[in-house]
Length: 364
Image (cartoon, rainbow, N blue to C red; front, side):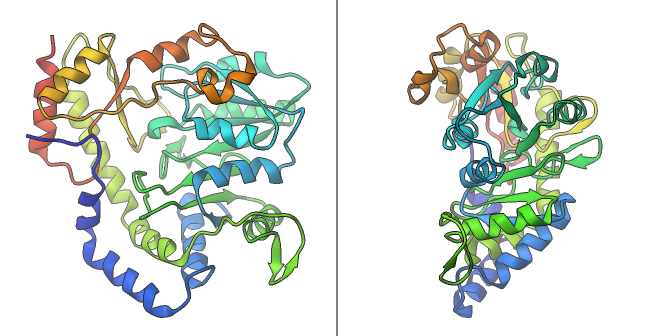
């Protein structure tokens, strides 16, 4: 049996008829940028999350860097962020000239809320939380810190569409919730796409102006903005998938439950979800001290895996200028050496799941 680490065709085939119908509808409409599909998706996604406003953008990275730009965070400012994240989270900070201040993760892969306060200085302007792998961070503690120190709060929700902490959906706790709709996400488009969710009407309007070359009215540019527009085709296809997001998330929850109940190998450490949170399992991430040997073992059985992520941002070549060396974030660096994402996608068969479980349990 051959099992890829991720497959995006299966979820397409689950809703093929509706997706193809919508694609033809948009193509025949003759309107492809900032039209009715984008407006409706923004309304529907805001309603889904519980946010007041949604603004569609070209990507999740654009959502991040434009968020910090519009919040006025730049050179000389510091933003606290967890060390074990995808580099795009950090890029959102540094593209504005601000400095990332790294914090170790907790046992749930999110930023350790107990370690944040010691990193706050008079230069700190914001906290960026990353709901990694679909597991929400400890938002009650983090919101309290932001209020105490009057800090902005930005959420990277690229992997947490539909995940909740204490009954409230990720992306609605802070000033800006940043979403990616990259095809592999729980709510995936069929190309690059992103959005922000905000509570403030003025900020939402600023995002709409900024994404369209800084123009509110055609050829009347208020600011030097960007070209970061969610297109009509992607918005229309996302509208179809949004109708089924809860169902697709529940399917992943069931796969994760099957893994959690079936995997019984002392060499493997399974992921955990904090008590007050619901996880949407963007990835099912195990830990293994003999990871390279496990990867090879699974490859020989036709099972693909991915490492999310092998190089922490603070040790990447891109951020050498920050001056951080190996040993700076020991927990983050240890995770980079032992985490492994096993296959997790909509449309997985029980046969495939059982085959993976059996294989991992046989690893010695």
